[in-house]
Length: 464
Image: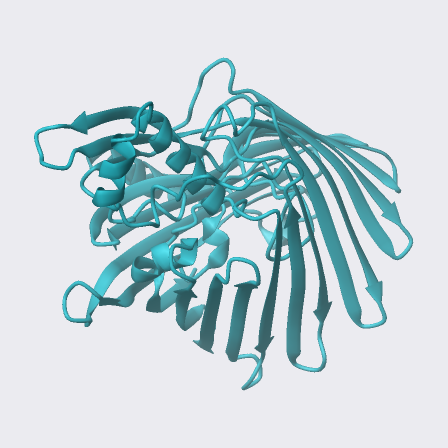
């Protein structure tokens, strides 16, 4: 806590110096240097239904946010950017008091090149709901924020781009360390015999290095990219790190310790964007090839080919985005067991299995962990199909913006709907009311998380 207060105090002490350094419009012809500072203050809460307490309404998350952004540049020579956040409140009934450096980086620009170094969010690909080629920036999938972009997390990296001619841009990105996404399973109430150890900080081992190469091709009426990634997937897997059996009870109960663990992949990507009249068309595809096999290491995902194609259409004041996505598992094999999370432990069945000569309980649990990874990564079937749509419009001269976003996986039957109404009664003031509602067949990911992810939320934000 003292650390956080000290950092915030330093930032506010620097405010006057930053503001004094801002460009004066009257002297704009004398110097191209500029320094600006802006941000927001936001407060809000999330409401839900407590299924364990007679379906009573409760508030699992409430927050007060401060966002501070600083930009500076010296003509076309260099630029710097910082996005700092402070949050106080609760998330999923747990106290929160944290200071985050979401992004902070410096860029140097040449005539035909530019280099950026620091913590930055880089999102490759052009699709809206599914991004098979984006492997550099992790995400916080349980972010309690009305702004969905707050899910994106920065990563320490160096990014270099070269523009040899207008039709081509070559890009290289290097990440020396690994930063994990925050998975949707983090707040799951686990059985007493299962614990999960998350990844809470940077993994700085010498072998955590990753890199990517990308060629952006700019054609008349269309853009496309070819990409290559070699490094650790931002979505880690779940590894079985400890197993023991309590033999004191009439029916032995296994104790299982799980640990989130990254795995290395290669990813080949392709994406494009073009227009057909008033309709924008975009798509991308990625082929992910893990270095290790899921048959040997339970935390490694299967090899997969994933694709997405969508449209953007703006008839009048309406904005409509629709997308289809699919996934194919080339070396698919049916899972022999049920996932360790998402299915009830049948103690009588467990007792019968243990009575079988030669039965290896530890190996059985490892297979269950592997089955859960496949459930989470949507790899329990050979082929998946899903779709998403977002519809929004502007009313009252742009002051009122209602929208509806919906995602449905035709294979797993996972369904998500997110209604929202944004009202801006005055400049700099935003009122947001929305909700998130998850549903899925028994044992699916959305069925597992719906109890704590389903919510109604409201927030007030003032920009400065």
